[in-house]
Image 1 (cartoon, rainbow, N blue to C red):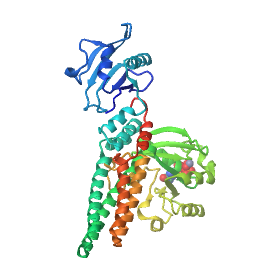
Image 2: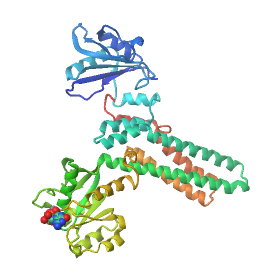
Image 3: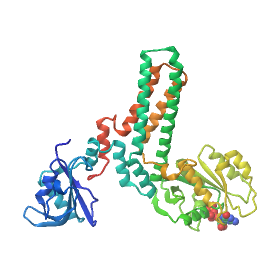
Image 4: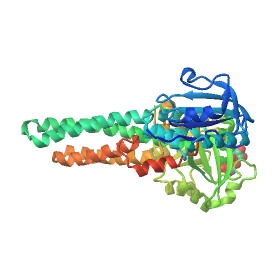
Amino acid sequence: MMDDTISAIATALGVGSIGVIRVSGPDSLAIVRRFFAGREQPGRENARKLLYGHILDGKGQVVDEVLAVYMPGPHSYTGEDVCEIQCHGGREALQEILRLTFQAGARPAEPGEFTKRAFLNGRLDLAEAESVMDIINARSRQALAAANRGHEGGLSRQVKALRKTLRDLVVQLEACIDYPEDDIEEVTYDRTVSTLEEGKKAVETLVRRGTAGRILREGLRTAIVGRPNVGKSSLLNSLLQADRAIVSNIPGTTRDIIEEQMTIGGIPLVLTDTAGLRDTSDLVEKIGVERSRAALEDAQLALVVLDGSQPLDPEDRQLLESLRDRKKLILVNKADLPLALDVEGLRKTYGEKDVLVLSVKEGKGLEQVEQWLRDFVYGEGSDSESSSMTQNARQQNLLEKALQSLEDALAGARQHLPYDCLTIDLTQALHDLGEITGEDVPDEIIDEIFAQFCVGK
Ligand code: GDP
Ligand code: ZN
């Protein structure tokens, strides 16, 4: 338990209709009682009840009309005694009340310190604490849902369960190191392999969910490419009309390109080099092949539009060739006209699922595009709601490291390497997973994580 009491404005600075000042620590109740005046003073008997009253400054002048609430530890956000004051959201009132808490003995909270105390007091683990930040930063409904799943301990729960399984495995293998008995060796390796296969699958799923969560937060970087007049602008317009969700125009910071954000089929896309795409004056053509190439390099997905009423021409072939190793969706447009393009041939070369035939003019095949995008992000057949989770770069990185160690251990077990070779990889995986939940994490990293929070959280 920390022995000092901290306070900060918990709501955003600026003018809002209400503002909250949070005081946490052993003296929080005494501090607030110093300047709160109401019919009832906050205390044990009215814990968790909102009390109406006024804040009085040193001279007995009314600073603001407020509601105060006392939440005794350990059942509070931080796990300590917490007092919160809800006042009018103006800057003056908030700052003045904050100053009064300092005068009464609180010290200014550092960024993230409330949440850090919650972590240190075991109210939430590290992954859950980090998802508090993600909830605050969520910019779409899906991102919020993904962050909430993190907050509810989805990631922590699974990581903890996995760690227990791996720890048990290490214990078993260590027992076998001390008492090698040839007749049980086969069984031990078989059991190890099957445990590791399951563990690997579980981590792979977490990594995939994290990737989906990241796309929901940051958008899927997409380049739309194709010869002039194949229907790129028309396609975008139709997709946009279906969703009516242009988010914003962001002038790109690098390479002076324009990025456009839009949500299609619930998936936020960041389309690069689409300046003027929605204008009738066709800028894409003017941007030229080179610019498109540059945008492509950076893209996670290419939408390749072809004109189905014409056979593939050398330019199309060159484009497809240059995208050979890239993730792409091939869209054969103008299906309302007689088909002159060898769709089956394309499907043989580029994959059955990744070639769609549509007519933007008649609005046919657009849902297929949306479904394809959802499958691309969430994995086929998974329902989007539960298939993404907010994992930050730190967590994702640790999951990927753990996955690598599990793969090494699995390969070792299949080759019947000595037990202690396997436990080295397993111990590494245990360590990486433990860093996610904070069970096994250096203090510097904890400080670094909470320093990214804002003051008041
Ligand atoms: P972009 O140059 O690739 O952006 O192509 P546009 O979207 O500007 O379209 C070029 C021309 O093709 C326009 O006259 C569109 O009306 C037409 N077009 C677009 N989609 C279709 C389609 O599905 N069927 C037909 N018949 N024409 C289309
Ligand atoms: Zn165009």
